Image (cartoon, rainbow, N blue to C red; front, side):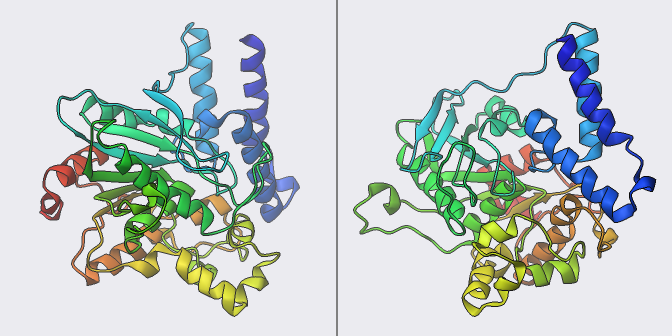
Length: 368
């Protein structure tokens, strides 16, 4: 334990006290991002908001928490234990999920969580450690946390699948959970989605997409509906169109390194090809808003008014910026729909659990 504490301290300090003056501001920012990414791989629990990107404050807080626990003889809080673990919902090696049953005599609502990680990393274990997951179970809402295909080959050798592969996996999770409604004591009419970063994008993409059920499909899972009641999204970009992001959010010209494998291209310039532009439009939840879409609860750090960001802003700051939430709220406002954005300059009217319970009980209540 002492050796672990020392290792954490050395890594955290190397990230947090490195002098940017010796490098030049842009080089220092890039180097820090790399160290933070490496630290996240070693200690995934440091990612407090489950968005797949570790920030300096998160790394510092994690180190401080571990130090306090070790000095006091305490243990890190463990995640929830699944009722059933590694349940297979598809053929791909990453098509597995964990199910957490809420105790109830009547069918329960369910929250489906998709982890973050830029579509190239992450694991469903993140769902077991989310505060909202524990709150849901204590409030009679069952929870599912799912893995999905990566857009780049993982360390386990599982084949990569660019867009729309991960999103289609997420949609199938919704259909699979509906197919288990009787066995798992779930109300198929009350399904919410949640996730951080990449998982947030997936959640909004599924929720805003037209119905994907195929009633005549030979696969019985694909006959079920993909429509959901609501989404609670953490730090999720609402568009994956580089041009729109640079215009409204700002940040680095390459936007984010995950976009290249996500779209299956070699360079960002390749996205100018007509076929790839069509994919860009199809991948952005913002482009799919229609008058039958469910209420949304996107939550971010930072402030909307900080945008546009400078060209040397970190990838993590730009891709998780609350301006994405404002863009979605503007689109929802035009149709009289509910998009309750939460960030520093847009305070919460209710917390996530209260929002979920209101939607499950009486959807129109969130409009009040």
